[in-house]
Image 1 (tube, one colour):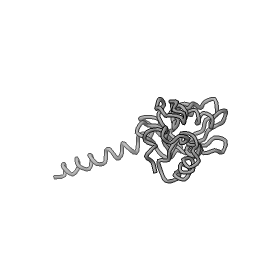
Image 2 (cartoon, helix red, strand yellow; image 1 turned 45 degrees about the vertical axis):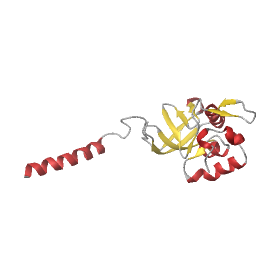
Image 3 (cartoon, one colour; image 1 turned 180 degrees about the vertical axis):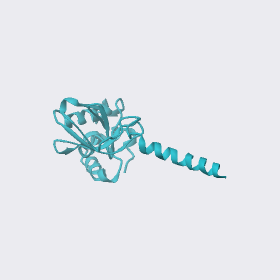
Image 4 (tube, one colour; image 1 turned 90 degrees about the vertical axis):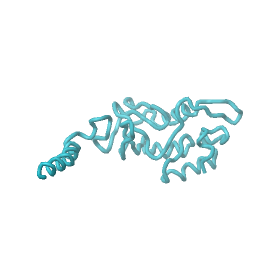
Amino acid sequence: MRGAAFLLSAAIGAPALVALVLPSNLFGSAPGTREWRADAPEIRVVDGETIGLGDRVVRLYGMAAPMRGETCQGPRGDSFDCGGASAAALMRLVASRAVTCRIVGQDGFGRGIGQCEAAGTELARALVGDGFAVATGSALRTAELQARQAARGLWSHRAGAPQDWRTRE
């Protein structure tokens, strides 16, 4: 009976011990520190919701932007890449500026999820408020509603906005 108890405690204790001993970023770019910063030359825009800070990748917290290549229609019926438009809006926000991100989690791809700012501007709030992203949580819902009501960004022609945006209320 002692042997079974020993095996059971070893089976439970070993994974816990391994989890405490191994570094948290062993399997990707998991946050090692809670704040990441990069100067302007080290910043790259991956898409409308993801930026690279040197060798680290951060997805902006609290929002979602259309994917590159997703097609939207303008008020005159002209098609355009609304994911590219969101990425361009993010590029304008970070252009020639240092970016600082407070990492609040990690996504399924190992990217940090962060609340980021450049020159005092909170990037997610600005993108949602300018109509180039939607809020995924309650913190930015007011900014999204104001962008929709003012017909800013991709809300300028609601019928031509990204498909999954049209039914948001």
